[in-house]
Image 1 (spheres, each protein chain N blue to C red):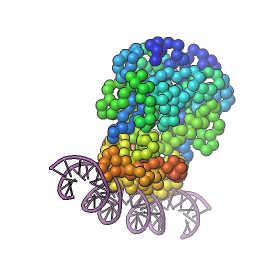
Image 2 (image 1 turned 90 degrees about the vertical axis):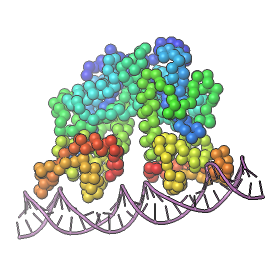
Image 3 (image 1 turned 180 degrees about the horizontal axis):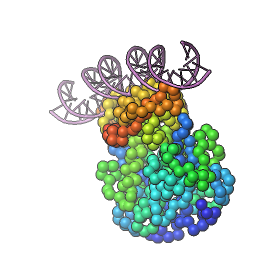
Image 4 (image 1 turned 30 degrees about the vertical axis):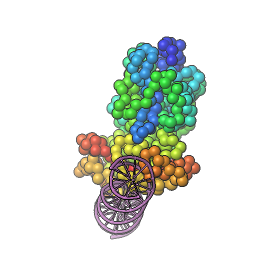
Length: 230
Length: 230
DNA sequence: TTAAAAAGTGTTTTTTTTACACTTATATAA
DNA sequence: TTATATAAGTGTAAAAAAAACACTTTTTAA
């Protein structure tokens, strides 16, 4: 390798694209924006932006998510870096995909309207520009794997939720029906949920107990290692 | 977002660094190079290079691995993109880490000598430049997870191997002792190994049966889903 | 008052994982 | 030649985890 390894090498644009998952009305959703700029004006895409000189990728992803949702402390994870030479027709661009989980009730609705953004159920999402469909696919696969190794789902739910909501969430992530009793037994065996004396009567006449997530017990559990196969 | 989104954005150097795993004499090893160029001349680092305009990341990683090992068809996977602003003191550089699994017997020994490269056991590896230690850590964690979800180990072994070699390999990846009988029972339950009539007498007087890996059955098994918890 | 809709609750069966010890084959040393 | 040392090879029983399974409760609205 020559000693001037940094000279005459190719510099490249770095984009950060975010797959933003939410959960609403029993279905897993993603937040997409309708582009009001070229290229691909009018088409749907992931929310993205470019990496700046003075920030690292996590910071860029946080900035981009804040711009769209108004939220700062959300679950986020780097997914994969996409690098096909002609993935962006305008210029050679690498894109580092991040995925985020947010409580759909908490985001800033005005902000997403300003960006012509919209929530879509996974099965009803439109075709996306560039390689964004692949990014979403990969994010779903990763989310599925994560859901089996830790109780990631809480990030997607409001602070108080019912067992049934939690189960529906897992069903939509794993894309299969789960047994009610087995699910509750498993969740309770972790001891990371606290049952409140309140009930939620939105979805049933009888009302369902609300639960919250016990962060302290959860962190203990993380240390000893979860087996979250459901 | 402005319409001139591609103008005045920052272009950045992209490096590709490879964590190359091998398995020899019962221990998991990594291949490191002693830098004969600045910065950090004389220190140990991962094998790396820069991404070129006309190639994608996978192609760059394959090129870099070929330069060092002379091998082309090796197991390789993108790991993570490292982006700390000052990770490289010379210039702002992102590094996309890849990890590779190779059969240590197959590589080109002359090539690695030309690069002043050397195999190190994981526990005896020297300190590395930049954030390369972190990369190795992450690669080991990924390898551990992979080892539990599919029988990845075959990539690291010669075409014919003994059960004991396979077990030793898993023991060194998972970093714990495994029960001989349970291991064999589990592996055999997959039906992806073929026992040959040959024996290997290197490690024992009695000799141990050699096995090969049945690629066809393996692929069938992949489709129906592995449970490789050992 | 009754029908409908969702919540809540335990036990049994099956599958998977773990624990565990002796015999066999052969080269080498006495 | 015999004894010894070394690693290979082999199966079963106990424990743990996962999966299957159905009825009762509460309430509202017809």
